[in-house]
Image 1 (cartoon, rainbow, N blue to C red):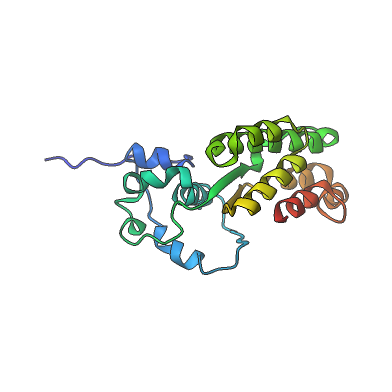
Image 2 (image 1 turned 135 degrees about the vertical axis):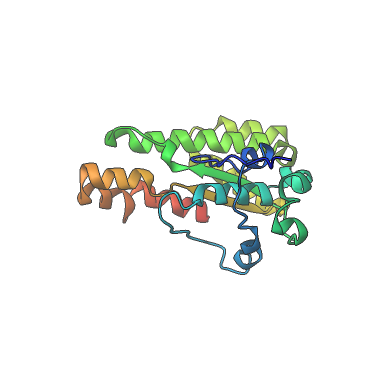
Length: 205
């Protein structure tokens, strides 16, 4: 019988799609127990096309409380499927992709706010069962991402929700700025009171 050869998902960064379509996947789930022993803020630096994005997508699926019941389907054939950790499916996960933020330098901060607002609105809709309809409406009524985030943090702290933030392509647009506008502009948005630095301060709480 001819053995079926799995397709290589070149350029595909969605873990769920790769697994559900039975595409070739390099299992790196054996590193999850080690990652959980590390400090809370992890920083992955690897070459391009090294699999960072699909690894982050895998983390999302593994820790997302809304995907807890899909564990066997998604991870059953992987290492972690036989060695699950206690944190599997226990987080509300916010997944951000900063490569989606584009635009001219003079409207970049506005674009950043718009993108984060969309993602935070989607986040509370995704976990509406935890926040309740009134809080969801309140959060979505805010026009600044910082205000939305503040409410989410307050509710999560009061109700002891576990939050997990994943940022993919964190340096995508800053590299573009550095290359196209120079070090002075890059420094202005990433240092001191620069809005990009402020974004990370807000997420740290």
